[in-house]
Length: 229
Image (cartoon, rainbow, N blue to C red; front, top):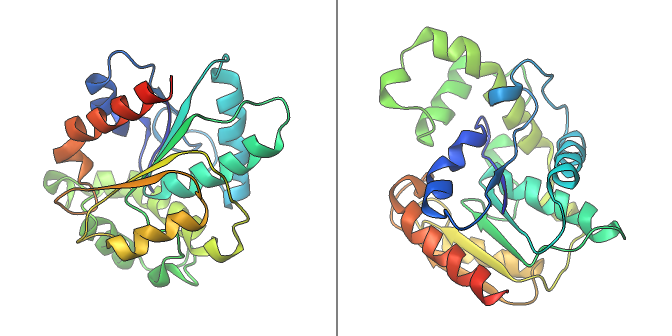
């Protein structure tokens, strides 16, 4: 299972799921400018990001059945990479996709977001989503390192238009969500793009409900991939 992280996140975000799924090879792809690739340049648009992730996917997938998992911004990454997979005659399609914590429409609060947005706005939005541990909220060293990353990723999301997404596939999809974060009525819009089996699992919590429910989510992933064998 190849995994795509949230805005400002890095590949280690999926460590908990990896531990819950020891029987599965979990490939945690790292965005440029993030985590272990922090010295590399940040992306300017989603085409750059998706092209880079598609390159890494082809390098790290050695054949056989595989799945994709995207969390929050990672769901946008997933659908853009999936478009590239579908049009590449040399690539097998994934047997299943998992989408979490992002509805398939553009984020209104990020319309027109530019990298000139105030530091305070970026900090407040990031803290609101629960992406920052309480111990780091007032840590200036943390913000010096991560503020440019959050700013760049929010800019990518702000430029992205789901309304222009040309994707329709019968690849089975599983959608994880929290009603307080992304209501079911909005998450149901994923059926526009995934027209085959598309199932939904609700969890209590805020945007990062995975932190409390990773074991339950792992059970769902295990069940679905077992059925796809």
